[in-house]
Length: 606
Image (cartoon, rainbow, N blue to C red):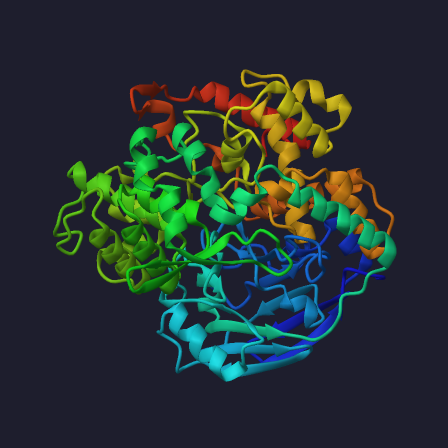
């Protein structure tokens, strides 16, 4: 391999405390692009059918694409993949600040087995040390990361789990450097099942560039595209909060367990982004990123780190009705310290609050807690109970599939999830490609398609987007046919492919990067690797990996019924200020799913 790829996979056996290096076949790199794409192929090859997620045979995979470690802006995206704690599905989660695996000399890391005692891995180049972690086991992520950093030094990237991961909470996360969250799919629990508290990684190897002059020219073009983006300055100032008003005005803050969305005239002032600007101390960027969408904020005499400000507002402000920056930041920090996926955890809390409100569960079942909306103290106490599996929290720690079954009394109707992953957006106000992709995403209810359709757009802008992501001309007519100026099912296929391609190459999926023409990413890939590649081949690599995810799920017993949204969406309307959005038509949803399967070339029945 000439450039971009290191050409090596590091394999680690925790049971035997051994490690060895294998060659990455060039064919696999070409067919699956890299990073999370190669993770999919490795999962199919290394994880036996029917393997229990918490068994030593489940393999934790870390992948960094060919762009990671270069100067390409936003190119620090890595993926952690394993069989999900929700059993039938391949879990994966992406974030930044783990790209040092490339500098250590590896494209992917595969970790199998189970340590007898708590350990953390220290990786420098191809040297792997199995370090005792008994002194940090039980500590929260911030405390453990600080202690490990004192032991390994400041140069290392440290990905760590909290008490939630240690206690096999099914919606637990991995946090890198205390602010980059590999949040969805329960990868923290997989690490916990292996008695692996953290991974500390560093290296001093260089990434080769096959055609340096051509690469520099393409690099200059992509930097210019980023810098001239009309929202670049606002993104640097507000990060993800740039979308706050648009989300509020388009009913993208589901609350009361998806029974309403707060009136935008109320929620916009509560989380005034000008107030956010006043609280902000500094921004934090992933390696090579000119944007810097992570932040440190100061409220009173306390400093908070914030990975995704919009998600915190959406989860704690919108869903839980908590008001005020300080309360939101305290909830967000506690979730990070404990190692909890915010969205699924909040879905568990709002489900429980509605069940309590309806009298389905009572105080003697919730450890004496009177569950109510907008109470940050109750939310934080429930998070703590979930992380430590105390009392009622032990039930909720089983996740959105199993916890309602344990509660019984019809609780499953109120569990708002797809494939065990808590929903991010409501589908009733607007059936965008992003919303629809929550149904078909192989890992569960998280947008796998990052398009421009989350809010209303003109037909011309949607067509331009389709052309940038290289929807084939022969497919454009059908993709652009629909009530919003597009078919959400058919557009999802193509925007999913583009989004996955960025992930697999190692590029952040935030809007500034997703609006860059695919041909420019392809030019960077060709000049970096020295392998002349077309945009169609890049999309084909993403498609191959997505097909692989589907293959894994079907192998484990998933069916098309796992792509159906919660019954509430078919039976109840949702309030949004003075507006009411009607329930979804089930026949329409199933027809859209068929169209999606057709666009992908999948069987409608399987």
